[in-house]
Image (tube, rainbow, N blue to C red; front, side, top):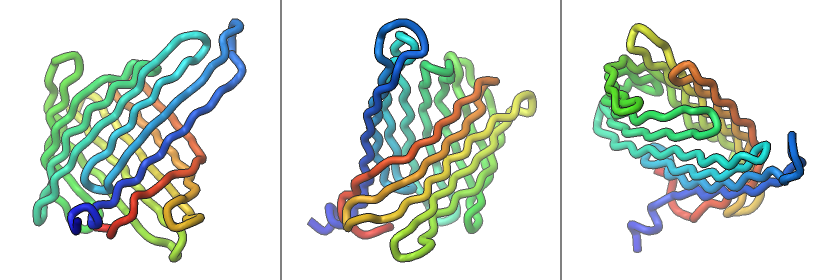
Amino acid sequence: MNLFLSALIIFSTSFSMRTPKVGDEVDWQFLFSAEKPKVFYLSLEEEQDSGIRYTNQEYWVRKDFKNYFTRDRLVSRDDRAIYYNQAELNYKFKNWYAGYALRHVDKIPSHRMVVGYELEKSITLLSRLELRFGINSNFDQVDYNLHARYSLQLLKLFEVFALTVFEDANSEKYRQFKIGISMEIPGKRS
């Protein structure tokens, strides 16, 4: 039971419908995400935009050691043609990290240097800021990603959040801006 109570998992689900840009079909989007900070992240999105259906997925798992952490990240975004799997080994110092990554794009590996910054901070008793920024390069191409989330707790289990995601990978750009409500399974923050 203590293991369950010590787990903190945040679930977020959203559904939206919008008028079509072209044609008569209604555009829509369904997104489900689950996260345990600094342990795992899962995001599944189904979307119909201008009558074309897309599936976007992102998964990562992370294991922390004393001064190091490993992370494996899989990104598949049909709407922007961004696909890769990246395994990392990083040295961390305070909120900064640097290390080595092996990225596979279309089964072709590339060796990369990685550097980044991560911050999770309570601003007040009811508000929280999460920031992740990373740059990686194979010295031929520079990619980056930014994930910023500000949340304000409404009730014990529910919070309102604003999310911004930027990613530039393999010469493709991905941008996301959201405002939503998330539900948290109770537990202790790790």
